[in-house]
Length: 72
Image 1 (spheres, rainbow, N blue to C red):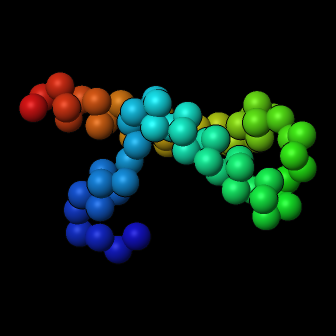
Image 2: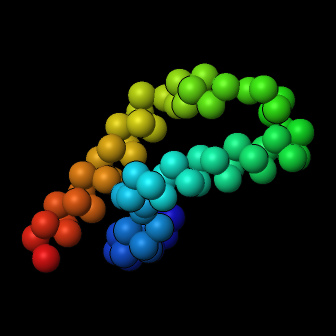
């Protein structure tokens, strides 16, 4: 992204499961309003489409952030 440190990435890394659940609901609602997905679309199917590489990146960011918090 061009930043000298990972601070900007860390700033926007969500590690709170409740916040993730809330974001998923909000995104799903937005996509329905914009007719991007059908109102009956199954969120589990959408999540299943996330690539293994992307999922591993998300998990790695969460683990890194948790380790940083534990060290503080």
